[in-house]
Each structure stands twice: as structure tokens, then as C-alpha cells.
Image 1: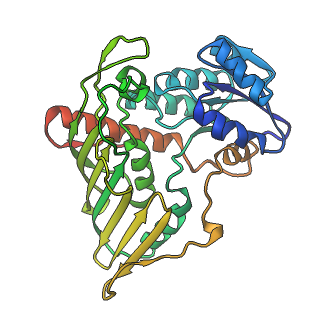
Image 2 (image 1 turned 120 degrees about the horizontal axis):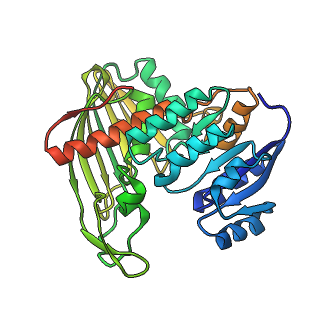
Length: 347
């Protein structure tokens, strides 16, 4: 528990860190932003000037070892999450790590083991924002039996546009930087676990639309991260989920989830942050009002700071849930490679 000033350093101050995390921490009383280490010293200096950070480090290890840093916010690509997280926890720092926990489940488990060894420290993963406002209501409806026994789930996450073969290699295309993470699959699965629990088994097919892309220097790279994933998953209680994640489904409808039960149907429209439903005997879906006080929305930095101060415990997202979504993403990759259903590892 910390009652004094909490001093935060940032390793990897990319778009999400500048747009969400730094402003989010600036709003928290008793928090001081003290240092940044970016991919280059020059980019770190730009961030420091923009947000008034006192120091810029060329090497992130120096930031992690700094005595006047109490907590580290990690905003790098996934390939560095494990190394920085373990080093920060071993140095006695609280950790807030960006989503897409790690490259693979083994790294996720190393991060979880480090967090358990340092149980006096807070270790939190950044949750996906797209369902935060509806999660509490959807969880309550399912727990209260609105849908009854869940039989089937349809989830399609559309990032669709027409394929551009000349688009340069993005870090999300590069398995050396992103690991088994594919599109928004992990963060959608994380949300789905809150409502329905973790999957037991998966069967997946994937598609790479552009097998080779040039990086920003013009060098060619083989693309091993799929642009499209279709999968079936067995959920607790035997429900079957059909999940689709795609960046090639141009002009597809917006992302949505349908939950079909014996007694009712629920629909989540992600972009609109809207729930609708109908129960047996009703003639059509109707919007389900969500009271303002239940639309908690983005409060990641507040939750992290409150957890450090002992005022609440981390719920979104724990390292345990991060390992569960890494287990799932790895099972999907293994199923696609083998062409058969595979079990999802249990934590």
C-alpha cells in the first residue's frame, strides 16, 4: 500500500500511451510522471517535451532500476512485454502492461510467475475498451438467467477493408514482434471470458491474404500473422461459439456478438456500445437500457493507482486472465497448423 506520491515511468510511449495512459495518469491525484524510455532517445525527448516528463532514458533498463520510479507503464509491442515486466517486478516496481500480454503462453506464464513472486506489487494488463461500458450489464443478465442455458454464440469482429498488397509491413503483421496475437482476437476473447468463461477446445482455419510485405526500408518480409480467422470453440456448459476476426471483410457489418440461449437472445453492437435482447414469446429484439452508473468505461489508470494504494483490487485485467487469452490464441494457431481441433490449456 502506498499513501504518498506514486512516481510513474513509461517504457514505450506509442500512440495508446500518449492518447490514453499519460493523460489518464495526469488526472490521478498524487501521481507524478517522471521518466520515459522510447525506441529512440529522440522520440523519447518529444514525448517528454509534450507531457512535461523530467527525464529521458536511452535504455529502458535504467528506467526500471531508477530509485525514484515506483511504477512502470509498458507500451511497447508484445515482443518486449515479458522481459520488461519481469525486470520491473524484480526491481520492486508495480507494472501496468499494454494489451496483448505476451508473444505466447509460455511468456505469459513467466510474467504471471514473476507477479506471484512479487505479490506485494500490482501487476495489471490494459483491457480492451470496446465492451467496458456494457460488460457489467451483460454479465448480470446472463447470471440472472435472461438467456437461460447458452447454446450458441456468434461473434464477428470486422476490421474489414479491401486488401492493399502495397501496404507496408505493420508490427501486427510481424510474428517476430507480435507472436501468436492476431488482429483483435485476444482482446475480444478476454471480453467473452468475462461473460461466458474460458473455452475448452477450438477448431480454426486462417487466411494470409498478402504473404509478403515490404518494411519501411523496402526490405521484403514473409507474413505469418493471419488476416482472417474463422474458428469454432466449445465453451463451458457445452455451448458452441463461432468466432470470426478479419481485416479483409470489406463492407462487412460492424462488429457484433449474438448470444443464443434456451430462453432468450442477446445482441451486443460493439461500436454503438448497445445491448438488445428478447426472451421466449417476444416478437423481436428490444434495446436494453444501461444505467449511466453501470457504464464504467475507461478507468484503467485510476484502477491501477487505487490498487497500489490498497483501495481496490485489479479486475481488468489480471495476469491470470492474460494467460488465459494467450492460451487461447496459441491453441488457435496450433489448430490452424494441424488442421484439427485442439484443447485449450487450463490455467
